[in-house]
Amino acid sequence: METLSKLQILSGAARYDASCASSGSKREGPACGTGNTSNGGICHSWSDDGRCISLLKILLSNDCRYDCAYCVNRSSNSVERASFTAREVVDLTLDFYRRNYIEGLFLSSAVMVSPDHTMERMVRVAEILRTEEHFGGYIHMKIIPGSSSELVRKAGLYADRISVNIELPSQTSLQRLAPQKHKDAILAPMALIGREIASSLVERKASRRAPRFAPAGQSTQMIIGASPENDFQILCLSQGLYKKMNLKRVYYSAYVPVSDDNRLPVLAAPPLLREHRLYQADWLLRFYGFSAEEILSDEAPNLDESFDPKTAWALRHPEFFPIEINRADYGTLLRVPGIGVVSARRIIAARRFSAITPEGMKKIGVVMKRAKYFITCSGRSFEKPDRPAALLRQQLLLGESPAPALSTQLVLPGIFS
Ligand code: SF4
Image 1 (cartoon, rainbow, N blue to C red):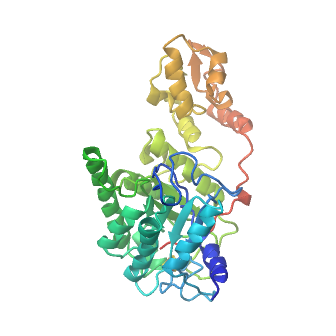
Image 2 (cartoon, rainbow, N blue to C red):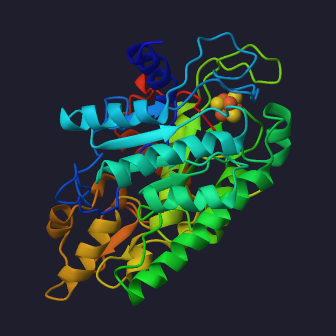
Image 3 (cartoon, rainbow, N blue to C red):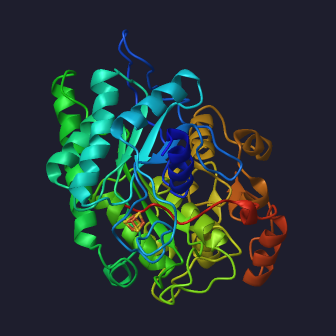
């Protein structure tokens, strides 16, 4: 098969993977080589559907021997199959890089023959790029669950970011929808990667010559809506992954039906708003000091569709408000709807010189249409403090900007190897 035909098949299949964002890695390209990676600006072009488009995002192969019910490449599905050689992927990457089409490579694959057989070929791509072609651009490589520790370690030495997709939020769902997979085979490489990243950081503190291991960290992807787990279960899992595996990012991918398998739910539309709310809640876990148990509970296990998770939390906790903007500490400011990480930092910095005024708050970047219900400024309230909860909900809803155009977002089930 011609390389171009393979490219059409294998880049088409790979575009379904949501976990393509890249950042946080710096790699100087060798003087005699091609490309380099910088902390800012690489791989940060996004298509209008919200996906990163500046990586050459392809599969090594879509010829899968596994049969995951939710995946377009499952062995029982009748699709055209193709596989690249390592050299073909290398040549495509370099050609595209030189033409300024891309800033790096995102390489995943279906499971050919066995996890090790596939992983060996993927690692070989990165090895040729780094050691023979002296490619300094960004590489994000998927780890095939079940591959040997040695191959995982090798991948981490060549790639900027590596990721093992967790796919479904529980072993029960994996067993039902992806019976050839097991959570232990997914979590084991994640734990190994977490340890290798941590020890590489320690070693590099002692010597800058020590090799770097996945300097942009590891990430994972979870499909939302193909299995019955609620948002609380999903957020608890993400929280555990951030804490225990030191993950940089969990990507949520709304399930889009690709088969009429009766093990899968019949959905009128992909749950894009749910995906959006999960991203917002995930943000609270990572940057706002919230725990999953504060956001949701067994009694209220799903995110409110009408409000972002922080506003929903604030509405459930009237006893926490109002917050005095000129006295509250950083962590408390972050709990106020309409105040983000940047505006909270600016408030703390500005207060060193003088008290913040209502006019100053807007300049700082506080979203007053939300924050005004939850704050005082030098003792002054912006709204009646004791309004009924139902009225407050209504006013907040009226002040909300229209929901993002989620219906146009392309979120498709992925290559979850
Ligand atoms: S999710 Fe991965 S392993 Fe499962 S069928 Fe698709 S490509 Fe194969």
